[in-house]
Image (cartoon, rainbow, N blue to C red; front, side):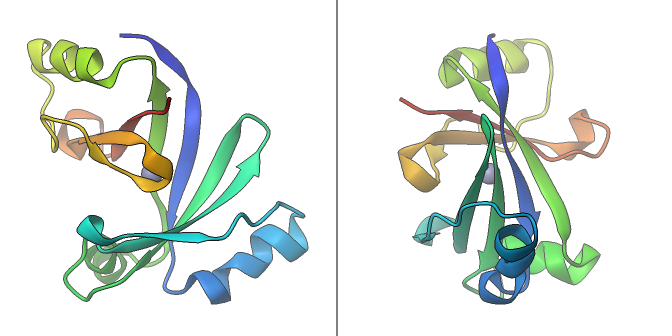
Length: 134
Ligand code: ZN
């Protein structure tokens, strides 16, 4: 498995509109607009930081994963995403190493990326996303 870099940090927020001012007006990061990923019941907003990005995540439905996260833990860092060269290969390797996966197969993420999550039980409580972009 080849990890290329930290692709982004995912931050759960109640509202992108309300939450984005810190990242733009205070930190001076560029706001690149929002994208809704319907199957994950989430709207995302990306803010490039050097070679990585901050991703704000707002739920689009009360039963979505971000809504559930906010209910349990409130706003904050929800996941860390590593960019990998080959996500299928990475998942096969992790599975062979006995790592519990949330996604056995990649699904579609924002920006046309292929993404998959590892189970926090296998990672000391950190929700880890793998992501491959072409
Ligand atoms: Zn993400």
